Amino acid sequence: MGRKVTVATCALNQWALDFEGNLQRILKSIEIAKHRGARYRLGPELEICGYGCWDHYYESDTLLHSLQVLAALLESPVTQDIICDVGMPVMHRNVRYNCRVIFLNRKILLIRPKMALANEGNYRELRWFTPWSRSRQTEEYFLPRMLQDLTKQETVPFGDAVLSTQDTCIGSEVCEELWTPHSPHVDMGLDGVEIFTNASGSHHMLRKAHARVDLVTMATTKNGGIYLLANQKGCDGDRLYYDGCALIAMNGSIFAQGSQFSLDDVEVLTATLDLEDIRSYRAEISSRNLAASRVSPYPRVKVDFALSCHEDLLEPVSEPIEWKYHSPAEEIRWGCWCAREGVEAGSGGSDGKESVCDVGDGFDPWVSKIPRRRAWQPTPSCLENLMDRGACRATVHGVAKSRTRLSDWHTVLPGPLPPSPAALPSGRLGALRPGLRACSRHCN
Image 1 (tube, rainbow, N blue to C red):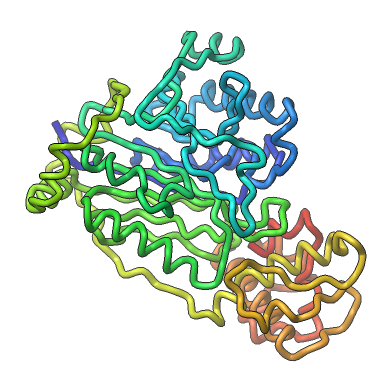
Image 2: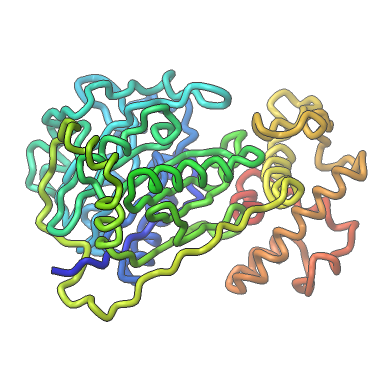
């Protein structure tokens, strides 16, 4: 039996209620993951319907269309021979849950509801969802008929469980659960889970990337294991900017880093890692092993599938890397201002009046007090002009990096692509404020 596994995580520019577009981006990410040899693919939180649906979660159509997209994924040949982990709302016994749906070869393996909901700052998850409070317990979820016809399953496990494949054990966390004082990965790791996954809908705040990386590396330093983090990217049709930063870590080291500000709608990270590195790492920590001998076991869903291959002795493994952080000025310049200004200029603000820049709780007060201008107004300050130039720089570099997106450039500004951001005439900077629909294409 092999021991080297290739796993994939991603950052997707999903849009609220754009079910068709979201489906295509999910399929593209799975296709890329399979092409790179991955046998497990993790996607962002609520990626099927989009994270920022707000009170549309109350509508039965949102649940129905999410099920229809899930059915399309199950039916697609792209999803064959790879474990797919997708996010969507699920109604169970008349209670709405924020769930991960994990499936393989037209069979749903597990529906794992979120256990700790984010309800502070810009988050209002308790308004629409209920947390699953029954630790290490599952129930039977009766599939709707449209899924029964596809999967030939009447019921599937619903609750707090882990997957046991032929070669390893996989456990799921969802966004906020990583940030809680007693995260599920602690007891999962003590119970033998070797691969942890975290699907996030985490918006940008200044220096928040540091906190994400610290939490993941500390989790795998203390307990060992592989940790995959996926995140939403872009504006999602909401007032927030989600900044990607997908990552793959093992035993306290980073092995793959996703971009924080990118024009790409689909970004997939993969890494090939050796399970024996986890087992030997854990075996040397006696305090961890003593705690593991006392932990209560998780329900295990047996999966007749392996993430590794039989003959993988000569297969190269990924090397650890050092995470590259943006400076505070770069985060402001490259990210939130570009995205938020694009949305506000296209929408004209919620009340048609001058609004205040609200780019996340982590921004410095001097930024939040800059008055936002309408698209037809001149730049009121050199600071805002500096941020516009940063938005320009992100656009030019993003298009230059992906030459297949040159047609997008011409929809933003006429004429040839400038060789560098500095070559763009300052008078054109205001054109980098496209409408809401164009914002996802140009300013993420």
